[in-house]
Image 1 (cartoon, each protein chain N blue to C red):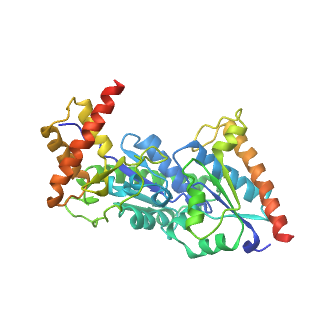
Image 2: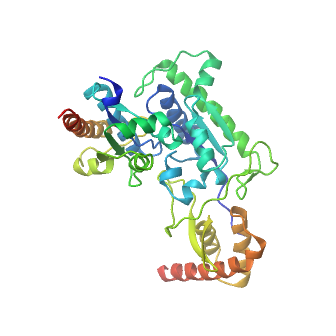
Image 3: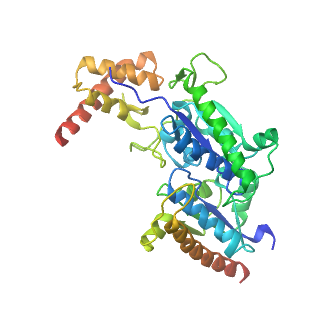
Amino acid sequence: MDDTTKVIIIPCSGIGKTYGTVSREAAYEVIDVICPQTSTLVPLSKLVLGDEEAKTAIAENRVITIDGCALACATKMVEESGGSVNHQFAVLDAYRRHRQMKPRGISELNEGGLQLAHALATEIAAAVDELQGEENA
Amino acid sequence: MPELPQKKVGIVACSGEEIAEGTVTRLAALKVLEELRPQDTVTICLPLFLAGGEGERAFARFYPTIAIDGCDLRCAARATEAFSGKPAASIVVTDIIAEKGFNPPQGLRRLNEAGQQAVQETADRTAALVDELLDKKWSRRNGGFRNGDFIEQAPRPQTATCTVVQACACGSGIPVQIVDIAGHEATIIALPAIFEQFRVAGKGPSAETTAAILEQVKIYNTLNTEDEKAYRDMLSREYSTFWGAEEQVV
């Protein structure tokens, strides 16, 4: 499958809090493990810089954002870069749904953080499948 | 005279999630922030320069900032310069790897040994730069070194429409306050912190206090001389409100 037909995953790029790490871990699990054929990642830093290739990718593909905090940088940057967000996920919302999975750690997530990232990745993968289904319909 | 906020060095990592070198930047920045120079460094997420408020955009003007990039696209350095202020220093991981002859790092989620080497080297160099920058005199008003070394003057922050006092999601943003000056809205960098320090020092509202606050405001903000009376009136009004609100809480 060509990259141009993949669902774009854009995680938060926060490095100061554990929720940013959870968002990245979930994104990596989706693109590397669960949906490697149907999803790919665009780094937020390229959108901040206004990279044309990144802007084209989000303009021409379905986009899923994963925000680490209420400021929702990933979602805002996609919208400001000319794309539209098909699904928005927030780590805090995922944590509210999975209170038993308390994330800790930034460089290295604890077991709760890894579980939360996995649960979030599973939800995101379902959204990827749904968007791919719409694309192919 | 109240003590001003401690001088720190800002760290902005590209955090590029699609390459291993991006992971190196993130982990190196964290090593500096948490282990090597925790008392002397702060960080901000790169997207907050656009998604955040005036406090975030003032970051590289308020703090001499080191941009850590994974590749020669230099997203962190270029975006920081475009939206906040010119970084005081810049590090590119691929340059370090080439210079040291390390193998290419691999593993977005879990770096290989070469990646770990790159993290250590990048962190060590960043920490050395932090020490170097702390030794230099930094002008928060101009966003550059006072002796004019290699930093150009940063642009003045744009006026925001929001009246909320903001702080960045990493807990390290610059506090700002939106105020009315002679009928015009203006963003005053560091005003909440200045007010708080005067209150803690027990300086109640008075002409003398207003004059002292104005001197502090000038350190962080560019004021036209002809606007001084309007600023003085605004500061007198705002500090009285601040003082009164704090007194009620107590």
